[in-house]
Image 1 (cartoon, one colour):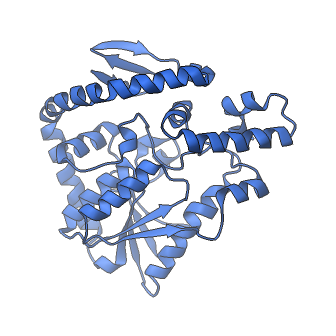
Image 2: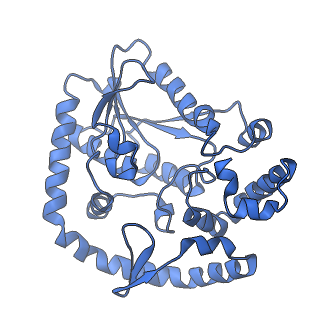
Length: 315
């Protein structure tokens, strides 16, 4: 039985707390990584069965809480969407756990599966995310899921031109995410006087997001009212709702990822970087090779260490 502690540095294994120094994961070599990967294959089925056997207890113990929270959230959605038509609103759907919950809540609150969903394919999505998007379409045939994607630029070509994105210079978001999404919104809602957007933003995700509000007028997109129905939900609430509702979700979370987005984002944690070496080995190898070549070009003496320790992220 394995449960993660809230801050992510400890786990409760069969009821006992075990601390994990995640920075030490950076030093793991290829041979040890292969051993870990083989062990994971053996453990995976056992861990999944144990987890599923405990889920109902978790749901039963918290049923009243999640029922009340979901009811209040659906009331909020109904109230804020009053006066908007279905063709004047959409769900911003990333394929992550938060937008999955928002999608389900909005669909149930409005009593219609026909609310438009917009998925921004950055071209750097986890393969698990793309699989989930395919399953979502199959399971929700009446929900229009529109994909916004930059088909004109290549991420690696842009990296050659501008250098890899960093926490300081995150040029990739504009080119591969917000740009294509804004363009798609302008096309879909051309001529509309108002647009209501449902986002899966929560205050607990970061200090910056805690400064947001559950209802705002977007400074980036004219006429857009942004609503965050789960703004005050905790991560505990999110998983409780998903498990209690029995809705499908992104497989990446089962593998240990805390967040899903661009698999090579400079904001990804050491933990995420470690998991990517296991579950997306081929893609990760290509990316690391590019980063090492780049590090050598800019004069880094120990390029491999520069890349492995994530120093390129703060460039």
